[in-house]
Image (cartoon, rainbow, N blue to C red; front, side, top):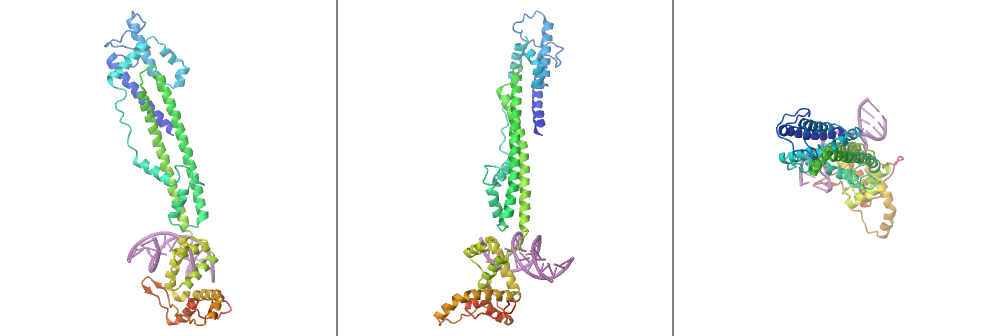
Length: 395
DNA sequence: AGACATGATTATAC
DNA sequence: GTATAATCATGTCT
């Protein structure tokens, strides 16, 4: 993966650096790359500790040492060391002289590092990815049992999910993504460190034979880090994609509805028909119902929304149901009410509601339905209990 | 399989 | 924010 890129990058840099130097050497010193011919020109300073009696021999020496410097950069550290060539190079009698010349040339040509224009501003794309990963709970500190943030986000996305099962599924998958992400990130970091160390060792080693300033090493490290961070960005991007896919699947799964339990429907219907004149439960009432039915508040809201509109659309169809729940409520209330009625005989039945008000309009029942409406509303108005058929229906 | 029931979503209005 | 109304998508019944 990344290694090859980095190696290529670094090798390129090193090679180009060497090429530059070679060119300079060629133009200034008249020494060919091969090191086998010297065309005259600027004379090298006399090597230390050398009498300089043999001019051709000296040139040959310079050629040799340059050739060795050139070829050594093509080898790995281990290879060079194994062949013991570096040692030979370092101990070469011409080395100090050549080294000082290289330093001088480098300084004069300003080859080394001119105002490292690196330090680019933070990539907005990377920031977006980071933010998303943080928000999804993939990046950042571990939160209990996977990702609290994601669970919260998922809940906020609709809140009507069949909570536990799908949530835990979602969280488990997200944790998986998180783990993969962190493992990969760690791998990259480790690889980056290893490679940086390797390159730094290489450069340090080379700095014994050619001038390499600490700034140059720093620059090289910067190049490596940028390469690795671009790979990290790819990882972040694919992680984000995975999270998005997971989320969309999760949201799709939410559409898969499951019918509420009979008990829950009963509780909701009881409330609906006992508040038919105003079937709009308050927030507290919704919470209470949600608790009783083991569903969410939004599900209660959905249910009442659906119920109101469907009831309104076809009151006749729901009449039977209305009567049934009216009867139920009446029976339940009967015992409690009976005592009260007995105690205070003065109470006469209140006028029953003929329908509930939706927004600005009131829905009236037609005459055919009025009888049942009375039954429907008797629990609010204190009408006598209805007669039941054998199947439990109201006559 | 098709019809109907029902929970969820969406568009729109306030 | 909540509401209605229409619609979607699935569950259930026949």
